[in-house]
Image (cartoon, rainbow, N blue to C red; front, side, top):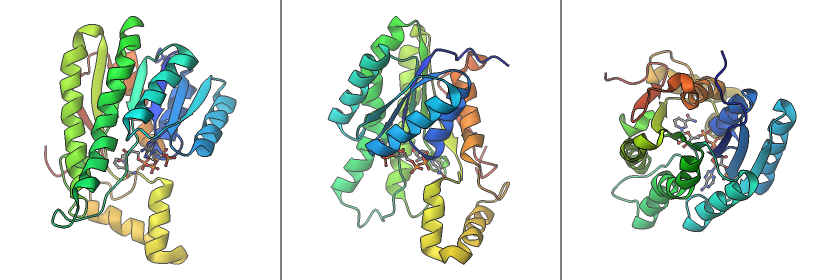
Amino acid sequence: MDLNLRDKVAVITGGSVGIGLAIAEGLAAEGTNLVLVARNKERAEDAAAAVADKFGVITTAIAADVATAEGCDVVVSGTQKAFGGCDILINNAGTGSNETIAEADDARWQYYWDLHVMAAVRLARGLLPTMKTRGGGVILHNASICAVQPLWYEPIYNTTKAALMMFSKTLANEVVGDNIRVNTVNPGLVLTPDWIKTAKQIAGEVGWEAHLQGVADEAGGMKRFATPEEVANFFVFMCSNKASYSTGSTYFVDGGWLKTV
Ligand code: NDP
């Protein structure tokens, strides 16, 4: 199936590892050129070089903190310099939290707001003009099942990811006439290196797999983690013109974990 993604340009925040890197590989396999964004320069550059080498596409790495206005500016100017703009933006950079509402201070709320919401706002503002000039595009937000089904230990994550979903819907309405489709994807449990690292810290070298199985069992549904590729496949489809009638929506890729319709 030709997804018509060859020679498009995609900006992927958090593209150096985990789900973002899997999306990068999925798009590169379709011939899409890439801008991979992350704070750790070396890891982003290594990922960009490896993807370019494996798939024969043009990639560039941008070291930037998208939780800041300056970092988002660097992404916009770097994309402009490398490719003259982009056709696809994947707002994927994000991270879990761990706190109680009673104890978390304003600075903590502000950090996650900047990372999960303002990054998407600022990058939309900066990248939409060239997307429009190029005749349209796709913006995808990687939120989480936690945006609608909160986990007790991460109230700030739940709240800011829910806000990201609403931003996505609102942006979709604003740019629907510009041939730009905007959607949210809500993954469930996805086995990224960070999950494995944390599980090893909690349960050790012998017990980490059982620990993760316990997490998956508790979630229910398929009772397993997704591979990053399983989630990335959905992102790639949503970037393609096979998803041409889909905008302003939220899609779950959660193995049946969601308990509501
Ligand atoms: P990882 O921790 O594996 O990777 C996160 C990526 O984001 C890295 O490339 C990291 O690079 C980058 N990043 C983090 N903070 C910033 C920042 N401030 N500025 C720029 N880049 C940043 O994450 P996952 O792949 O697990 O998750 C990706 C997204 O998917 C997140 O938004 C997460 O909330 C969401 N998600 C994940 C699930 C899971 O089970 N894994 C489930 C549901 C949703 P660097 O550290 O170098 O900046």
